[in-house]
Image (cartoon, rainbow, N blue to C red; front, side):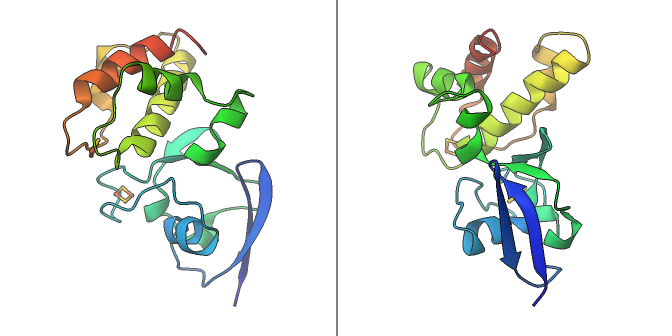
Length: 158
Ligand code: FES
Ligand code: FES
């Protein structure tokens, strides 16, 4: 069985799985990291959204063989450590604005939100309505309005 090594939430990990197994299943079923959720498995729902080298991506759509040993994968479990706190400001804002309903989509929503704030800044502006419109994460509970409130508040904190 091939071995695949990468950095997961700051720690080097190695998984023994076939090359074509997609990263979401390696994270969840082999490494026990279940923050990234399985919704569609097709790169559509965004429930699995995590970060690769600081950018949002969908591990359900990436074969583990495409991940390099130096790639930094961050899931919701590793997000607080990126700011050296118990909770990332985006997570705190989610609590403050009572965003979650069933909660299933929320790890992906938070990871997408953090990446979108960074992306907007890299483009030279703070996050706004046009950026919100680009977030494609589906929430079957319809928490979209509170998500936008929480992102707006959190973006002032990091
Ligand atoms: S499970 Fe990855 S995008 Fe839906
Ligand atoms: S909170 Fe239920 S799917 Fe988003």
